[in-house]
Amino acid sequence: MEPGSAQSLGTTGNLPGVGLASARKTLIEASNVEKSYGATRVLRGVSFQVRAGEIHALLGGNGAGKSTLIRIITGLTSRDAGGIDLRSSKADRTSPIIAVVHQELALLPELSVAENIGIVHARSGWSLISRRRMREIALGALRLIDPAIGEEIIDLPARKLSLHEGQIVEIARALSTGAEVLLLDEPTANLTAGETAKLFSVLKRLVREEGIGIVFVSHRMREIRELCDVCTILRDGVTIANAAPLASLSDGEIVQQMGQPTQRQATHRNPQQNPRQGSPIELLGPGDVRISILSGTILGLAGAPAGPTGLIAALVGAGPGAGWRLSGEGFGDRFPSPAAAARAGIGFVSGDRATKGILSQLPIVDNVLAARRVRERRRIVAAAERQECRDLVSALKLKAGSIWDLPASLSGGNQQKLLVARLLGLPLRMVVLEEPTRGVDIGTKHDIYGLIRQMADAGAIIIWWSTENVELLELCDAIFAFDTDGRPKGFLPEDRYTEGGLAELTGMAA
Image (cartoon, rainbow, N blue to C red):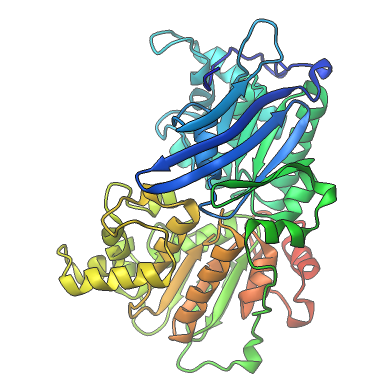
């Protein structure tokens, strides 16, 4: 049976499920699947199965073949060899409905939240569905995740959503189809701890009461342990472990089978032990908040997204910035545009690499050199720069065939390294990082950590927002926290430099 994805009209507030009678029935079975792109063998014999009533973690480093396997299962990519067997638990279907929530958002920016969710319930591109019906479907799906959020965002155009709100809408749209299999690719990357807990509660209930099968792709071991029943581990396009019970494997064994480093070096630097030089740059915020930062400092931002994103907008010239402004030699209060901020020596890595970071229609070489072109108002790539790009690709271990390949040829983790790499070698005074390790494996995280330390050691101020508290605690000299409403709460005290201390200050679970 060929893989595919179907659509179905859902019901409001109650997802059509497969029932408890179908528990543990195999819905998807992949056997010895192979796939190559030119000379590159992406999958070299992958076996994988998804059963009803089970949450299955699909694990592997960046480039292991997870995304390619998902595309083959959903019919977006053909396989070269091997078998895919899809079996529905419903009498009126031969194949299960498979819904995918990708790491990068796939919303139509000018359509409302209701339209983005309801549109998949039209039977064809020419059929009509009433706005009232769309709102009913959308509200019913959103209530499964958060009863309060539906009324707040239902009529907003998708372009006005934050990253984490957009992710919630994507998940709600998938749930609204009555899917028997739900494939989630890093679904919590943009969610707060509280939102993640609510989502997990929904997923566990759907598995328990509706008997659906869920595939969960994540690099966060704590989340995997909390949510999943079994795991399949891929490495270099081969299945290392197939549907193994998570209880039978330690974290170290999982990481080792993924081919990733098992130890993480403690990198937190006490600012008092690492004195900085020069005049500080000050960030002036609402309520007389004043943050002084010396060159070479790594400052972490923690808390609900509304706080860090407002400050970041001010730093990179992307908007009014919720009352934040800069003070320091060579900096005005605010930048009129991102280009003005770049020319003043501020580098930026957006957390939304698909729409605000990667230049998808330009080759890797243009992506790497984009920041210096903006600074220097140039368009032509000199021969020396082409060689510099090749050297960067090699040094960063980017798995790219050629610098003239499009970024789509890279895995998500390698795309993220590319974004950080474009800032290397530039005379930057400040580097602003928005979730720079979102959706990347442990090894790639270490590579990115090294790049960030390299820029800090060169004298740049690093402003780093992350929703992973442990990451901030490991790498940052200091952490500035915001509460659940996005209001500044101040610095995390050095004597409380723990996950518990940070959770207490932000009002969010560690």
